[in-house]
Length: 368
Image 1 (cartoon, rainbow, N blue to C red):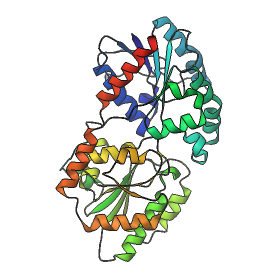
Image 2 (cartoon, rainbow, N blue to C red):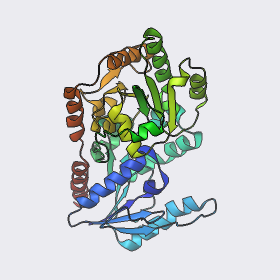
Image 3 (cartoon, rainbow, N blue to C red):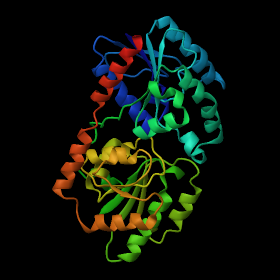
Image 4 (tube, one colour):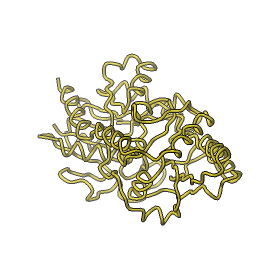
């Protein structure tokens, strides 16, 4: 089969969806067998081998071009290429694909329905408008977690039979890294706990800041830093106010977006990753932390228990006191060799090759 992947997230996204798309494409190429993989992108790079890349947009275009590209130019290219299957990795599509070509939509979450307050108005409006049509036209809907599959079945029960859960894989770029060179560049010269992800309301960093205040106040003799790593998202006024008013602000480090090398060292040497998010379709930072042997404390909602398994520590969502108690336990004891091995073993159960093989096997059934 000829399988086309609409790989825009490689060029236009950051954080989770970008990482997902890159790793999924590489795994599909490794496991493609006799299938041909075609990438349709906004620019061509040497990042992917053993596949064909087509560029639809390689320079700045006027307003309205994106819609023309998505709804007309890409479908025409797909038709000319005579592909059998089109995969859209970021759930908003594919659109206007010629009849006879199978459509696979990767659905990361339904947060636009469950937590619309964490989306810009135009984003949730467009998703509410188009997602029912996308689901109706898709031949296969793939989710990253049982939680998202359950949500789809609950909201759109007519699509249960064509919805499949495939858990994501671990990124081999994350592993225990004994170097501290990147930590020193960030000014981290003491014990610390950390968060890694986009700084936005959905991550509930206000609860993390309050839990950090409680632990420091209750145990003034214990000095440890709080590192909040990640790019600034949107609606950050509440976070900024809480940070600037924090009594231990001098011990809170905000390095911004970090490289994979820096993230790897953050996970490896931390007392624990704290992930208080209110909603996740998967939660890649948890898996990345486990891949480095780190402890993880996370909220007990949505898909997070699927990623954390029995290895993570859980607190009730939004409960700063309960989170503070877990942080206090973590800083009182260093991660044991046994725990680190449990984290590493658990991370090994998440395989991109398994993901790709399962996806290809499911796609092959669409021919029947």
